[in-house]
Image (cartoon, rainbow, N blue to C red; front, side):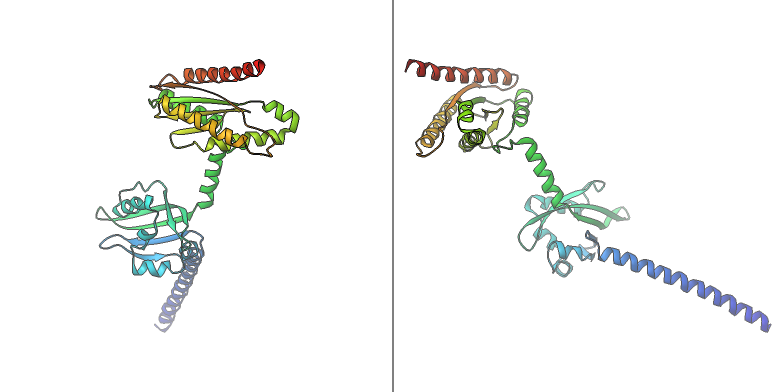
Length: 315
């Protein structure tokens, strides 16, 4: 009996040793997870939605990215996130809290930091359900501001001319395609060509020629609006698309362009003058008409250029 008791105690001792070993491994594992979460550059959170909206955990990264007091503020006031969300993204938070988002897709939103700057974040949220109702949310939120800025820069470069910062030919042709096939509006195309660019290049050099192109672009860009698209479509050629317009406005704009050219040319000490040949074509309907309008505007521009040459010869 004595030996049997010893054996039982030995067995219990072994089991306890194994238990404490497993417990220590579990604790070490949890400490590792805690260390990873606490030191993650991503924001990790867990919040209850029902019976009331409140945060149970927010990782320290949020204070590095947005505000050093944001965890404490959010625990006291769970609606704090609604106060710093970008106004255009407010509806995203509302839908997320209501469980009305597609949680299989990333959630893009912008939050304001203490400096008043909005930072773009990408969130992957997982809803937690009980009895068929969403009761909590847990998620990871990553700062993608640099990625978004880079993407915007790439998109800008893809649609803008590097010398003049105007829209480029690709963007112009994209817009032509839209108005030719999808959007039917009263529209006009203006074609402008810089006169004597070759002479300026040959006489003063290509740097001066580039400056002539830039000054012309600056002048034309003053007329750019949401409905007036200004583009450089060739070395010395510019195109303007006027949407929701009429011939009277186009004529007025061409007169204003010429007035600004005259003002520029009266500037003493300039190496060059701006001389611009111009032509336009208008249609009450854009669908199926854009190529025709471009050709007409281009022909009118060449008529203007030839008229100038004729006057020079007569003079």
